[in-house]
Image (cartoon, rainbow over all chains, first blue to last red):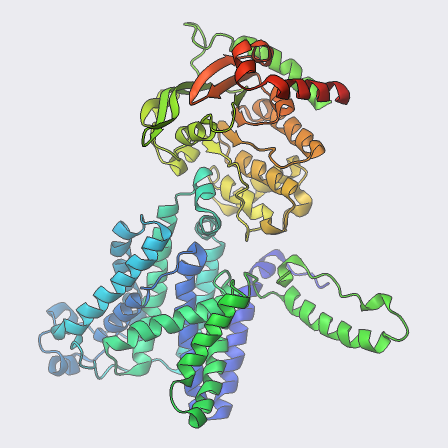
Amino acid sequence: MARVGGFARQVQTPVLLAALVAVITLLAPLGGLAMENRAMVMLLNVSIVVGLYSFAGLSGVLSFGHMSFMSIGAYAGALITIPIVAKGALLPNLPTFIAHAEFSYPLAFLIAGGVAALAALIISLPVARLPALALSLAMFAVLVIAYQVESNWNSVTRGRQALLGVPTNTTLGVALVLAALTIFFVFAYQESRFGLRLRASRENELAAAAIGVNVVRERRIALVLSGFVIGVAGAAYGQYLGVFTPNNFYLELTFLTIAMLVIGGSLSLTGAVIGPVLVAFLTYFLQQGETVTGPGLQQIGLALAMLLVLIFRPLGLTMGSELKLSSLRALSFSGLRRRGASQAANTSSSSSEPEPRTAEGGPR
Amino acid sequence: MAIMGAETDRTTAGVAVASPGGANAEKPGFRAEGICVHFEGVKAVDGVDVTIVRGEVLGLLGPNGAGKTTLVNALTGFEKPTAGQVWLGERDITGMEAARLARLGVARTFQSGRLFDHLTVLENVEVAALTGYRTRRRAVARAREILAMLELSHIADRRARELSHGESRNVELGRLIATSASYLLLDEPAAGLNEAESDQLTTLIASLPERLDCGVLIIEHDMRVIMRLCHRIQVLDHGKTIAVGTPEEIRADAAVNAAYLGSVDNEAAGENDAAS
């Protein structure tokens, strides 16, 4: 077995995941503009779902409301990057401090993330104390409130009318860098002492409390951090769309991102990355199928995929395992062994016994 | 055998705390007075005093439904006492939430195993070590030390859900030790273990008060475990204390025998004879 240093061993998971996403992205332009577009959506979904995972996956409390942070990020990011002149025409009643703000996009993404994180902090004050199920539903209430505010705050969001003229700064490269940074950031959190405590509370809230984990505090931290990550992703998404309404960040997106997390597996970062990647491919094939069956196949197919995973593999496809070099090696070895074994089956039977898989190699 | 060593320690410590209420006795660190827990008219715990002393193992004994676990819940912040007060040194900790209590030095285990299933054994212990150590690096080092002490180093990287029942119970104890708490409350730590495993765990628990300078309260149904382990035993029945004393005194107590021990004790004594 190849020796891997301590640090390298630790960061291999985010490195491999970022590499996986990068390879798919680099291959996409070969398929033309449509494929490039799909890759872009996939990358943004990776950022969003990894952001969702940093709360829901690590805490074990599913959130039906994190897309509210995405809309906040999208609007905040858009309002501070649309050129001042354009804003004067588009949104004449904008508060002056926003009307006169114009930032370059990387800074605007960060500010948008900060605004979403601030919203998450305020929401967390009453909400983080709630028991798990109530917290999930409270977040749904937050989503509804955010949606209604954005749909009616005409002077700032243009209400139900689309917000136009948002600079389209999110190129494929920007989306790739953002997805990679998100993966590393959330991995660092997951492996920090905060992330460890939060994961312990996910496994057993009472036992965690009994050994000193302040579950409310850890959930609050996760809520703010995930708000930031999703806020940044929302700003990037807004600047990919160029034109959007509150409907872009409502129930459909909520279902889509939760389905991705469930399919990939909410117990590992790998699941949060693999989910959006697999759904990107699934969506492609379903859309091809729609040319034959007519509309609706895409949504039904995705919902069915989620159902099948919930029934047959409730912990998601990754079942809590992280992508590691050793698991890749185990996969390729078992493939080789199987082939070798079938060849050698006539001469020797003792070698056909499959090697027991390592603990980190995956499902048992 | 380590048990013998524990036994001699027990007598000396037992003498030192023979009169916890005495005016000159050292002020006990953890004490509860008049604890009541009532659920809609049911008096699960009804006016119980408990004192846990550092360097000593206190056994909590009683038939099913006597209120043992409810009492421990009330002492560790998992149940708000209807009446009564809990003191940690000079500090009134009545009704304080569990996580805060654990950080102040009162930690517990549960009757049914409650490990963090998807975390590794090392991580399980490390989470607890984070209570006393600020960084993960230090907490990992501490967790490795504890696993080595419990002879569990070989399973450090296994996920908790892959462990046998006996291994889980040991890891649970390791996790409790890692909190560096001064008062450890164990709710039936040997439940479901076979005799050899139970003996091993007993030996380990017996060594804790001295090794960690902590006080231990243990709920246990297994008489052999209780009689070998405890410096003092407190017997509950119907939510009230019916006896407190050394194992010898409890064994001789007629009320206790009538309420609870009886045949169980004879059985245990027989087993002890057979073992020696």
